[in-house]
Image (cartoon, rainbow, N blue to C red):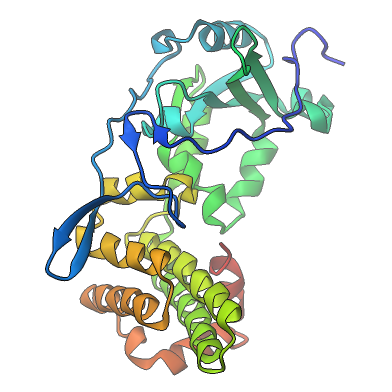
Length: 322
């Protein structure tokens, strides 16, 4: 099947260890693996979002400065079944090291996509002249059926790549049309999305507090971490944005204007998850929601009951997944 036009697929069985440096950024190895800058203050340590030296965001195939990636794309766009190319991940956001790999969605015809075996729906290629070999190409062929499925999905992870993706080849304009549709945040569901994520964060926090009072230390920490992750998701929702993959949540948050106060509260909760630190994060987010003109945090019991009522349950299913 399609032997000449499907790039060789490799199995990746080893994940390299985290480096102590990421590009130009030295960071502390901590429980949250975040890059932090610490400054003495009267109240202890104050965290600030670092200014990242971003890598260039590529707007065309010609701008790709890695020959292996550029030549592969130049070859692919000459194939009759290739309709478009969208970069995503670090090369689209600018987050990451200059040596990061190239992630791309390759928009292909439905007929070609349907003939692919599962193992051929990811195309990985390495520079084997280096030791260890370095991943250069991470491409995924996709078709209209892929986009249609994601259009029906309420999950942030099915939409956030398109909010940051960069279309670099699209002679028909159809790929950019799909990207814009999938990137659109559903403002008509904004309050419902906030309400469900708020309920999830507060519910996990409540479980963590009860576990703490009963002396179940590890149960408490697990639920407090659940609450923190839900709170990060809630913050992006408050900002009317799809929550991005949390691998790079700090530069995403900086780009969207997270204050040092908010970031510091999150970091303190991640460093030392406790009823006090996680409670401070939720109190802060509650104040943000109320400042935006929403009243539901003032009556959490009613808000929670609305999310599990027969009329609200579909919304909980749609918007509470992380």
